[in-house]
Image (cartoon, one colour):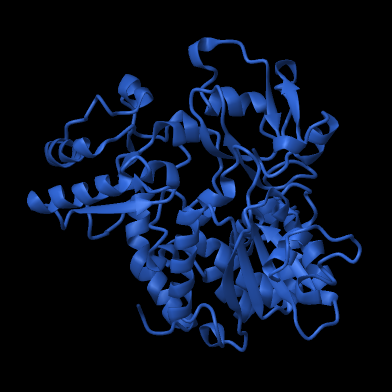
Length: 456
């Protein structure tokens, strides 16, 4: 890895890598590679041999003497799950779907070298319209804040995260903001917990910050148990550093020196990528003693889930981290004042934390300008079931159910009638088709007798 980074070196590191990321976003850049081939490396695509696709693309590029022109990147989940494995050619925005290892040769020798589209795997929408100037319909109504790096960067390469403004929020917090100023920015943002209850994040943090104790903890709840929900898994697989950076910011804000990421043991790929990210962050001096040359020190570790649905409940989760049976505890006292090992503890879920760096970098008012009056920002949903394009979508709060199902999800197979959708997992409810014009936010779903939950 590299030497320890201080604030100045972090900024130099970001600028050195930023040109490659700009090309990937379709922005004119003087990056050293002419093409970036992005290959989905989420769990579903890996199970369909995306690793082999990456290997073959690199081999064919080298064999044909264009290895210096083509950068093949294994990313996290694109969200376009029902059409995987997905390969995206940038900066052209060409979307190849249901890609198999046998297609790697054609992608290099026909698409890259001869400028020929491979129609049999070209996404149907692009095959029909041949318009590559804008994103496909699946992304048009999305606003990717939490998922901005998923499908964009290599999640196992900290340099790529830094090149896309990674750890700049942490630098800003440590050198330009007091804990109270951080809390104020999050309060202005209106960010509410994305784990289900929708409790104001700033308020939870302030309770623990104001608690008198010589030890405090920050815990990330990644024990995602709702059927059909895989938002947290995909964030950790595709952008683990965003959660690590946010937890470090939270530790600074509340006065914690230690944190734990509690992940379902069944999420093998997410666990491995978080472990890799933690090693890299320690090597770069972004975790541990005197981070970036500041006076703040913070340590982070992983705890694997006990395989029980109930461990998603925060007090049961704490019991499991402590090495006990994961059973819920009576409340009060709440974890914010007496939590892990009896010390004040903030528990946030993955998606909540993944919003923090954007709020710090772009400001609370910017975040509050997105969404509805009482539900700010975006929400990530796992769109599954009888829909043409299933996968992960991130939309502004206030988007209607109809827009998600029909505009983003492409409607129902064979144009059949849809009776309803279930939101909020097993604790939620079923919303009939006549209510699909409802704007999705915390309050509206509760008023309909359902709930947002974690976003299934």
